[in-house]
Image 1 (cartoon, rainbow, N blue to C red):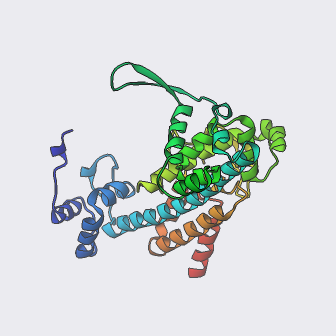
Image 2 (cartoon, rainbow, N blue to C red; image 1 turned 135 degrees about the horizontal axis):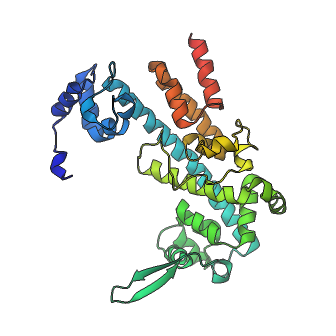
Image 3 (cartoon, rainbow, N blue to C red; image 1 turned 180 degrees about the horizontal axis):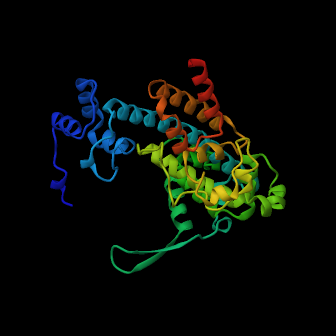
Length: 348
């Protein structure tokens, strides 16, 4: 398909297309402003599926009774949810980074020359790449991580420059400030087994020796790796303004059933059979459920409350979306659903 298959359309032309496809527009001027400010692609193409007769055929038009304002409300709801997801995962990220830095300093050293020694890291996967002047070079995951370390340790940005010039050392709790969540996960995954177990133990409030004892039954360590991957996926998606309320990922999900996630949780349990059918692997409900596993409950509670607030605000105008949204986000049998039901009973 060439670019001319999707030619530029002026705002009024976009309005006309929507009307021709049987979409009701209650306030044309307001709809025009929304399209100008946020874009036809972002609003319509991003959130039209629920309202289409055939989601795979635009020409089939919209279902009877559909209106632009409802689509835009779903777009607005998604923006609010996205911001709350990002804030919650930023809270987790801070806790994860500091837990990693604490264990590194305690069990290895706060001296950058010691804690960045190769002997404390697994090499990880190897990658081939072509040199600019010809030839092929091999680079490991550890090489890539060390390259990032060196850029921070020699940075002229604060607070790294201050610690380097005033103290001659940048401790791990300062180094992590220059790392992304992805970088920090790399560091964790390439660290020795005892470091990983101690970080997990610190985050969930269990002694590492106890984790080793129960891991065969609960699969805590394997589940933790999947959770980190899931959080990174949602963190990146929310930072890049992607549609999030119905997001699923085959690549970034809980890959194997874990009793620690699906049974030993304050949220309603999930059976192995439900898991095999694809439930609660990579949805917003999965993010909420897994945030509840950690000792620092603030990100979990904040997200739980904000999801309730955002959904309540939307459902006051569009109560018919109740089952659709809770099913799509996999929030059934949670505090969020309980609060929404309570609100509906109070209204009625």
